[in-house]
Structures are given as C-alpha cells and as structure tokens.
Length: 403
Image (spheres, rainbow, N blue to C red):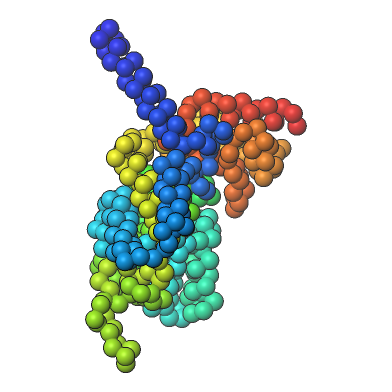
C-alpha cells in the first residue's frame, strides 16, 4: 500500500471513530451501559428527550388546547407520516400511524374478510404480536392456522413456505427479521410465493425497520408493521403500518376513528366513504410529543448519520459479535451467520439464559433472553463498538469460569 493510500485509510478510520463518538455523545445511556438491546428498546437520543420535555412543559404552561392546536396537530401527523414513508420508501398516504408493531399487525389481519375454512400460514418462531392475532382468527372465525418452522436455522424458509401454501391461504404472516433467532428472511421470495397462491403477505417489521433496508416496494409486502422505540430510537407508543394502496379494498377498517371517513362523505343513515389514505385505519391520535419525538429521532438518523451507513455498521458489528462469541468456550450460536444482521442469539453451556442476562446487567451489559428457542440475544446497534463486544465476551468468559 502506498503512503498516500495508507494515509487515506487512516483518515477514514479516524473519521469513523469521530462519527461514532458524536453518535454516542447524543445517546447518554451508552456512557453508563454497554447497550446491546435495541431489539427491545433502543437508546433515546438526547434531542428526542429534549423534545418530549419541551412538549410536556408547553402543555403545563400554555395548556393542551389553543386556537392553533388542531392545526399544529394535523401538521404533526402529516410530518410523522412523511418521516415514516421516507424510511420505508413508500408514499405517505400508505402510512398509518400506530402505537407499536402489534397494533399494526392487528389492523392488517383483522381487516381481511375471514371465513371458516380460510387458511393463514405463519411460523412457530413468530413474535406474539403477530401470532396472537392469528390465534384470534382461529378462535373467532374458524380459520385454519398452518404452522411452519420458518426462522429456525436448520429450515430453508422458501421451501418451508412452498410446502405449507395452498390456494386456500388468505394471508402469510412472517417477520422480516425473526425475533427468536435473528434470521433475516428472504422476504421478496416469500412474498412472491404468497402472491402466486393468492395470499397477502403481512410482515412483522419490529426487528427490521432501522436495522436492515426496508423498502417496502422492493420487498413486495402488502402490509409492513413496525415500532418506533426499537432500532429507530424513538419514544414508546409510536409506530407505523404500511398498507399498499392496491390492498386497501382487501384490508378493511375494523375500528373507526375521527379521521376514518372522508370529510363530508357520510350521512346519518350510516353511509360513508373511507378516508383516502392510511389515516382510515387510525382509531385514536398518538401523543403529540411522542409523534414529534419520533420525527426527531428519524430525522437525526436520516440527515446526520445516514441509513446506508447505519445498516452497514449494524451488520458489520453483528458479524463481529457472532465471530467473537463463537471463539468463547462453551458458547453455542443459534443465529445463521449467512442470514443475519444485528441480532445474535446464543446459549452458554451450564447457564440459563435469564440468569446470564441478570448477571451481565449487574456487570453493566444490557442484553436480553428470548424463548422458543431459549437463548440470549445481543442487538448490535450502530452506536456500539468492537471494544464493547470484546468486553461482553470477556464478561461471559468470567461468568462461566465462576460457575
């Protein structure tokens, strides 16, 4: 390598370190913990906290209603839909604002006209936020639930779905990134298979949005539900649901809110025309401060950090963590390395996952344990460092040695 090329490489490394330092300065909790749990809740940026506090202070000092309050609310809703649409690569009219992924999954699933004998295909490894609405379909309508092993490393997801699908299937319900194993599913292939069978593809994106590229048009999904508080580093009680505009006639309104009807397009006989966009599915308004906070977090990542860098950084750290854990005696990896990004699932011989989570917390490491299959889970956020991962592996070695 020439001196000039070496100097450029070193300059790039220095710039990367400075960028990570700026990011971590915006996330105060990273100064206290090695924070590896974005899959549950991401760290809250200082500027997002400040936005929440400023909104609460304004409510206390100025009141929660004024001549301009409703106009400001409408703008807030519009801005939040636009920010979510930019993340997902869709039109803002296809965004419904929700309070979490589970709400979005319920909207999409309960909106289909189910009949006894219809089928829904899903997987044993899916999160309860997607599975439990499916169970309700079975209990309420007599829908047949076809379970697969999609998400488990030893099963090919495409072949599993192909074997389970029939032309009686009305929907396929799967995650983009599996919460229980960390597998990144080949969503485009799965969605194409679903469509060939005449089924809609309804996707749980709780572990995907903000961790892997989530352009919904490229993925081919019909509905895509995500939360704001995980990889997007937004406040609790925020989320978004994408429903492809061509599927609005398939996914009907289950509940109705203020914005569910087009203005002037209803009568007192009960006739109405649904709102033209995603607001048709919104039952209640989100907390204005939370909506603004989600915008702030999204704008910070979009404009100052850059999503392509974020996705690459998360995946790079995920693979680094996988390899580092694999080198620790007694650690067994569950996540398939060839199909992963920022979730790393593992077990430590002789230590129950919940016990390891507790002991690591006492040592200053925030991870979590998951179930079905039982494991510990590390979420490698774009704000983490290789040194933190090395420290985590050393801590696991020390805990195991003390057994």
